[in-house]
Length: 267
Image (cartoon, rainbow, N blue to C red; front, side, top):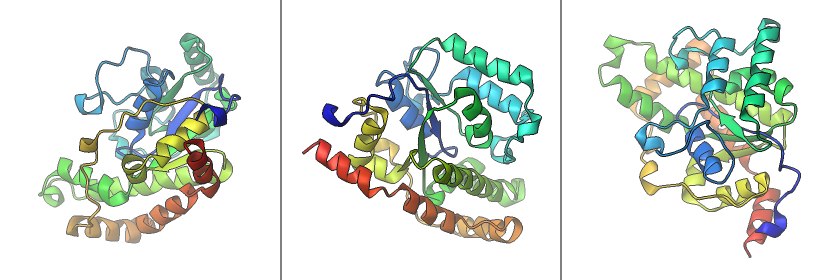
């Protein structure tokens, strides 16, 4: 595979993009264990041990940029307006880069989909890796968290979770259109075939550790009554269609050229 690795990526930061609970942690762990530092500390635990592979400084700055103020992440959906960025925040981002002190490094934080314009200006030309996941599977995570009596406890929580999936992934689609060189992966395919890992290795110009575990493929994409109800709310209230967005993501992630290249690289 080395013969097809690119060499012009050696000194560029990597930004991993994707909605919450969509595979960004797995991608970040894969990169970190492959020699691209994604966090500022030693990695001694995986996703199931609570490690979300998020660099503290970039996450904190994203939260400040978005005026998080302790709100649930699913309810932070407004993208950063360029006019709201201060020179102090730009200096803070540059200080983060200087503190890392490496040519090859990266970070992931789902909120970056809402602040990407800021980071693009600061990083200038980062390598982009995006990942998306079936909305039914992501919804299932939040349904388990909310419990069966979610309507009486917080009737907007699950519709808001599905709305966030739509908003974040619409931004991911928009970035793919503006930056066609971005690698866009589907979580299910990445977990069940070798092609996604091969494509990412070629995209990043280096061999990658395989951090996938069969136990991580827990969710089943079967729409439930709860999902259908939340989808109806989102379509009527927010004018968003998760099924349509998901199909557009799948179309955008299908790259025959990369697929042929990856196949040739291991033949």
